[in-house]
Length: 261
Image 1 (cartoon, rainbow, N blue to C red):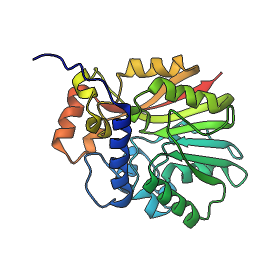
Image 2: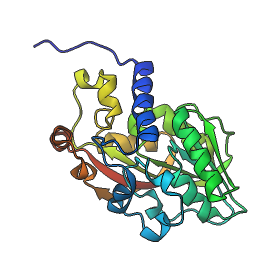
Image 3: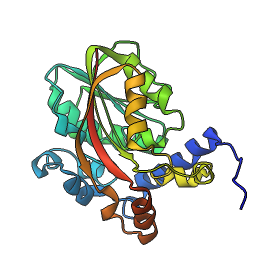
């Protein structure tokens, strides 16, 4: 069988991703091929007392892949940016950590998630959090404007990861910290699979082999890049096909930190 020469259509990837997470926002009760909601949060390591402090309507549409706060780098009064903030679970947790003197920006490109996160922030009575529309590879924040960048299961969905991590580096202040959870692979995906936008939205084929992923982060300028946890995220998938595909590629979660030296 000849190898496909089909090139990746980035616009189609972003469209497929937006459609997928629109459903997660408006139909949280629907079963998805990836874990979502409160049970997923608990499996990933979110403490129950933390989840109890934020609205259920944020948690019900949670679609992260790990517990980035394991890094424990956020301090009172800091400015934080959450890249791909979804329904606002991590934004709200970050806001509790920064306190009222801090500032948290949540960035998302899906209108339904943005609207839901804004409502959740209002219902939680959090004044130091704000949701803005944008993409990981085009962050509408000023250079050197935040102390910490967090993200949860997002960079694997971005076609131009190099640009996305350069954006994260750009908006961080000198000495700023990166704390993220994301999907990586043990072996590369075929070019044929990578050219399928729908497969990107399903959180596996857009991921990179772990060594390549860490190389991308370091090449963006980050130092002290350290993997602090690994997790078989897809073990909790309700879809046997997804489990099989993930197992075949060695898809799993890593939680890592890095610094802007």
